[in-house]
Image (cartoon, rainbow, N blue to C red; front, top):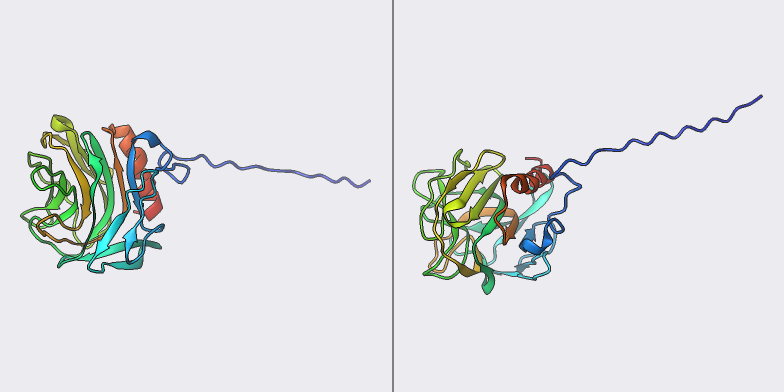
Length: 232
């Protein structure tokens, strides 16, 4: 007698929070202001916002698309001389704002801007400050420097939140530093510069901007997603 035995074994992998089962476009989407993905909508002319808001960035003075830049993923590289990306008037940076950026600094300059709004008198900014590799945030008050430091010539993830006295600033999965960085609000967006120059020699592979005060647990979802995506 012959027996036909068919065994089906189904192995289900658990999806880790912030892993590939997590989608930053869909999670709490009502608070997603803009999302720039180096693998989608990036060319030598513009970087398309993947959120429903369509806050596309225009490139000036020919920054270079690096393909691949980090573990198979693309990025935009700015020369620190005159290249930048930007748009005026929108998005509106009304606090609270939480940002996640995957980047690599190729050189260092005091006051060089990595991510900033584009209204001169009222500005929310993440930038290089005195003493390599120090970085700060500002929205009317200056923060302390990012701790632990994010070194140049290395890709990493920095999260910064503009939320008045409860603003915070963190490197990868390290504990956040909570500080009062001011209550300024602003509009528009510039990468690798500001309205008066302050150009930054930097590669940016991914940027998420959210109109929410993400708590630590929520921040970890986004940070872990980016760590998994970029193998950091």
